Amino acid sequence: MSSEFNVIKDRRPTRKIMVGNVAVGGDAPISVQSMTNTKTTDVEATVGQIKSLEEVGVDLVRVSVPTMDAAEAFKEIKQQVSVPLIADIHFDYRIALKVAEYGVDCLRINPGNIGNEERIRRVVETARDKNIPIRIGINAGSLEKDLQEKYGEPTPEALVESALRHVDYLDRLNFDNFKVSVKASNIDLAVASYRKLAQALPLVPLHLGITESGSLRSGTVKSAIGLGMLLAEGIGDTIRISLAADPVEEVKAGFEILKSLGLRKRGINFIACPTCSRQEFDVIGTVNALEDRLQDILTPLDVSIIGCVVNGPGEAIVADMGVAGGMRKSGFYEDGKRIDRLDNTDMIDQLEAKIRARVEIEKNRIAIKDLN
Image 1 (tube, helix red, strand yellow):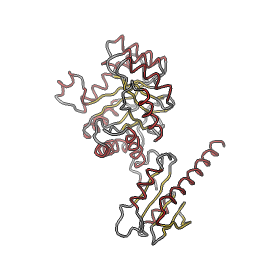
Image 2 (cartoon, one colour; image 1 turned 180 degrees about the vertical axis):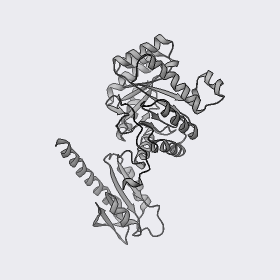
Image 3 (tube, rainbow, N blue to C red; image 1 turned 90 degrees about the vertical axis):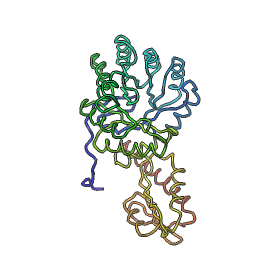
Image 4 (spheres, helix red, strand yellow; image 1 turned 180 degrees about the horizontal axis):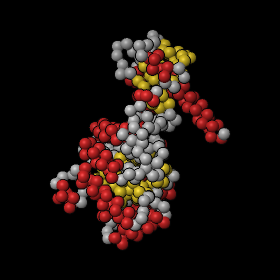
């Protein structure tokens, strides 16, 4: 689509930090992350969940490490997965030191709640020596007591003041390998807080999220609205969609938000009509079946599935592949041209085969390009 229609503002310039082999900030793609909800001490369950997240393309995974036993389990988990792992730690600085020893890729801490200045210094110096970035994570539900009393309730000013307070610990230790978040479950509060934070901390990468956003449906809607507003303004370098659901759904939702804004391409983008009495085949059943069958595909591809000839040809022409419903057989388009007709009674199997064949062609094309 022509750039004259683009309503997305230029990305806010930030410095780039490395979380394992994944860049966050700068000109790096906006990364999508999730968090395990298994008991970390259950190594098998946690590894299994991380591998499920890897299968749907997650960039980063956060793991809660509340105890030393969990830290020992983290060591085993780290050895069995390839995606970069972030350790979520509160209160006990010794846990941060231990997971740093075990190869953690990022520490999620709030310096002020892990003890005195000496303990903070030890964690920061270890992070510096091992080139481990830190995320300062502020939540509206856990503001410091004095800020609660000062502001009376969570406000953008309160969240940003809390963030700056924690950033000050790192500044005094000349440590700039960090990112920051200011999350709230209320969309207005979260968006206003991130806007203020972006102004207060120029060049600092920001982790976006609407915390405790709710169930799969309501949480996805809230996150899409809140994060969509910020991302459209050029704010944000990595995102997590917090859902009371399978973490795999968080990753899917995250990529859908980025794809919808044109900020990231991964997997198949289905363009499908809501259907009406003009449809010549079961569009809804076809799309649902293909989404389920093709979850393993991460290659970007636009596929249009329209049930009639009113909008079908027009949508198919501008997609990589598309089908326009017709009586008994529907027109199949690729790269803007109709090249075949598909039997309406066998639509799903035919489309899956054609999509997978196209993906292999795209993979080979990319491989050849990389060799050259």
